[in-house]
Image 1 (cartoon, one colour):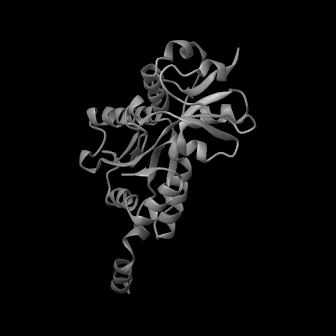
Image 2 (image 1 turned 180 degrees about the horizontal axis):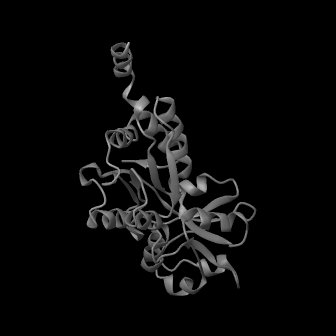
Image 3 (image 1 turned 180 degrees about the vertical axis):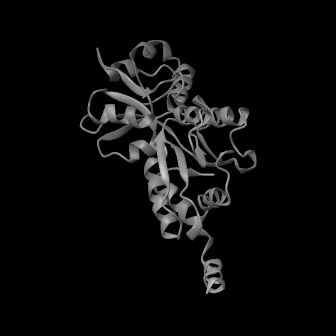
Length: 249
């Protein structure tokens, strides 16, 4: 009988014995990764545990020992940070996605603005309005925003009026609620909301390329984690990313 039970266990799919994976993903990936997680589970794997926040917050949590199998960043900086500290399996690192940087306004007050050198962003904000975006000190979208605003020569006028948020979705929320007359987010975040519209898109040459590196963490490096990373490159996952507005590398 014992031999029969052992034989039956050996015939079970590997994924049946796999431990649930923990994914730390940039906030802008929230909707797409939740949808892909459902596909992963439907493929016979345990449900993913997912944590979404700014790349900086997640990277620092991993540095402090938070358990994660996979990390995805909205910029190269924070993936480099973990690589420098020997906290990712460097052979698994892949740039999977790209994005655009956009200026948004509430859908109740739609407007279009030509974004270029010296563009009049102050008039968009009004006398007392603030510009919502991630904190440029550490949040990727805010870092890209600062680069673009400096390149276009309007940073000094805007910097004192920033509403600095902990991640891109928090910046989106301020504009959705009308608490900020404008914000700088990714185009995918704007597309995910019916409460905002895009007023303009920042020129690609005004900031570093927006890339999303993914990697298995050193502490969470398992065959199942590597299988998940591969799953993210397959057609079904790529279709989800494209549908949510990401540029697939």
